[in-house]
Image (cartoon, rainbow, N blue to C red):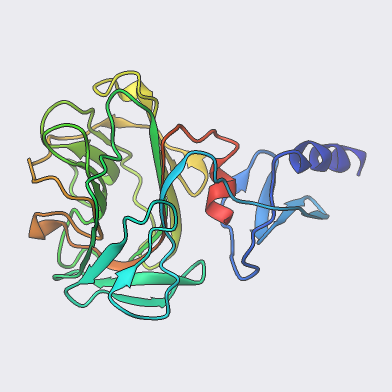
Length: 267
């Protein structure tokens, strides 16, 4: 019991409570496992902690919590996203989410912000549920406008060239990576991708976290070049359509720390 309490005290310094009590956080942290919103279990001890969420450095945030309509608000900078092709706002993991049919649904982000920058750090985070790969073997979670010739992609794939979670760009100036770990279909997962800003062709400057766990990265195959546009649930290429749900998309202008990843997921 004394050891359990020591672990709780150490964890209390950084773990925060989820603001939405319906959230189930499904990843392991340090010496305990999150059992639910703001609860972490150490053997037979359950800790209810306080205040989760990471706002420092947040430059874009689409929570998708509107009750309807064809526009979803960027709560940070007003670069709202337009729902196109039949994309709809439905019940999600954190309140509401966007549902996409894998055919022609997408969300186009307004504004001309290059969120993926080679000389400066950034982080991308979101919850996702992929229904299947029936339409596309390489569905984009988000195509992110970059400061180079082609956008930066975060996607899933069953194709061995980009298997698991993958990121990259088609202009040859960004590293390309894959995890080769396939997230369970039909289930909610949380992903964080970070870049240090210290070398866009250096794979060691990037990290991918899946459900709170740091993933091994390996070289992925080249990406195709596409026009610049920040787009959620699709890329410009119709082969990159997402079939499923996406919730709570966030972009930061800094690297999220390992200790911050569960706080972002639980927000």
